[in-house]
Image (tube, rainbow, N blue to C red; front, top):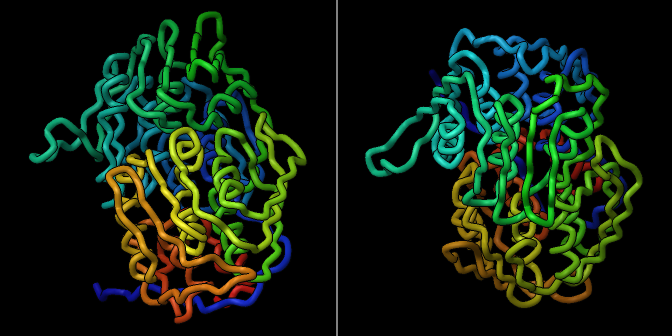
Length: 452
């Protein structure tokens, strides 16, 4: 087959970004909306669904498990089959590039009386799965995966899950992970006896909010970082209720940072999710001196949403670590671009999990910042970035353009594009990966006046 050259997004030094915009539906909530709707006791209408490739992977997987899903732009109609209504897939299920899909599906099918094979692309097959397989095995499922010769203590996709009768356990998670927690919640809903999940930190709580909204027997204690699922006395039914997905804050973060670093910009993002376990990026940018106005305007499925207004100005370096790093882990690529043009140094720490995302994001960000001429030091669990004296009212050191290498990582691609808006030479970004989470990325920025 003839090789196809990737489509390139060309980004140039931009004038001010102005206006109001919306971003696609929250990717994390969209995954859960599809999965939980499939387990409801009737049809569920979903509005605002994310249209990226990862959410399409979850929809495709559920269809393979016997769930009827009709998609139309950002709307979906899911014919819920109930917790016990799934059927065995005829062939291995392709999860594409989506770590959320494969982890949550693993927890779901672990309680089903059949065998399921889950696979994905080259990037997904490098994602570690033992931390999920171990508690599911303790619950009674059989979970097998690929075991490389150089990592006999780890397993990777493709996975084979032989589900069936599960028993509840108390699981102490090695890392704070919403994907891992959510997978065990789904398994716990199908187990005999309570399942208690304890995290070392408080990860995002979309699963807890949404499942409680649907009537699941789930109890959360954020102070103790504990979630408990106890099916005793539960009728096994989730209420079929309409769902509304707010805009994705992780996607909005790139638009917000673009507005903060392009001189003269004033941008408002509407309808974006503002869940406090997820909004660390807002707090991190405020710590950098960002001119942000945040207003909560409503709530859906227990999820607050609202507007974020961002105006360009000077940013200063800061330290982002600990709980703040956990609450902004998916937005670190955008934060790194803000740090690139800030005054002074920014330390990004406690981010070892970024080594096992779609790419090694720590190395990828160090590579791309270095290409652009930004001072950066790669650390085992993060980055130290020396900013180029800020933007807005003062002079800005020169930033180089060039070719961004996303290496199958959508957030690295978008980061390169944002930095390209303040670079002195043209920046080129392969666009294949951007559709994973933000297929309208270029259109939204163009609509605000960006030079793309």
